[in-house]
Image 1 (spheres, rainbow, N blue to C red):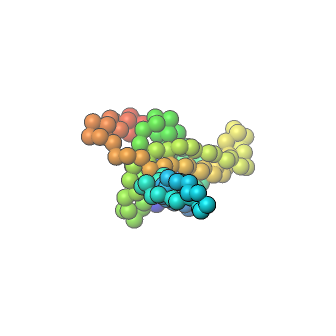
Image 2 (image 1 turned 30 degrees about the horizontal axis):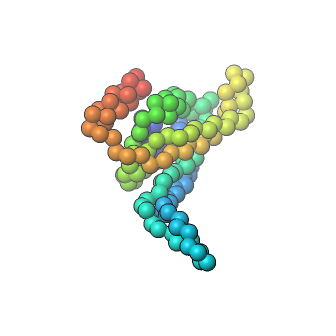
Image 3 (image 1 turned 60 degrees about the horizontal axis):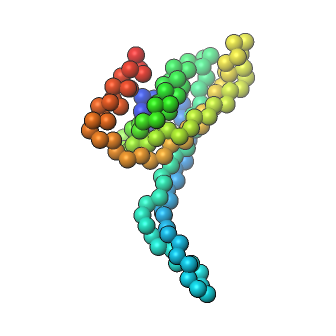
Length: 143
């Protein structure tokens, strides 16, 4: 496993992630000062986000079911747990967008190569009650 996002496991086949980017920010309140540059007052951590690049070859290896699971997780609006393949815990994130680009369309209109960009943003840890509700969602999606 290369990475896991909610119910979706990115592996070499069929749904492969070939890269990701990670960004963090700090938040500042700007305070104007007469005759000088504004003072920036640190007010805490800003947004933390990832962009995951993935690719699948549905005609050769399948993977459309994983793409459907990803769309369901995004549409739910609920936080998903993200973990890297080496066991690094990335934490809870919300899936903001999933963008698909299909190329080399087959006779059925499905691309032979589908590139997927997934944008996620750090979310707060769900409460205990929410956690079990999220788990139930994952169990329903994977049936």
